[in-house]
Length: 160
Image 1 (cartoon, helix red, strand yellow):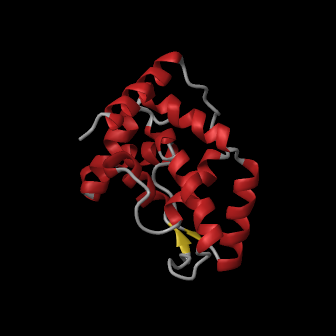
Image 2 (cartoon, rainbow, N blue to C red):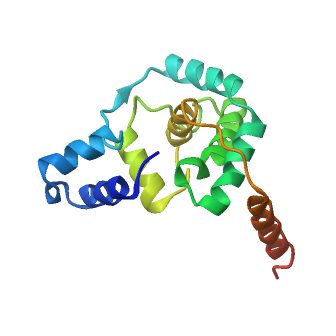
């Protein structure tokens, strides 16, 4: 789990790389927020994504999304959307329209997760978030999470 100090330092670093001292940079590296790019071939990308989707269930990703509602834990917030996007991409696109990247950029994706959010754009963000999820603790939602979901759905249902 990434602590608040690491997130704060990381966002500061992404805004101005020279704003942190050596120890602070090392700290955010230890927290796995600053990482090297990962080269990937088209074949590896599709094979890995298919494998991830066999190892991750819709129930797991739904649970962690719900869990993220009350905790506001952004490490889990985009997993459900990533799962749905990846399944759809494999079924309908597979690189025809949205090209497969030649590298995965974890540092940038971590910044997106903590700064602006979402899985907009290409398939490589969902790929990265799902690959990270394989090694994350699988969370279970509480009653409070279900209540928040009911409130969201009620609001959406009554929206004019």
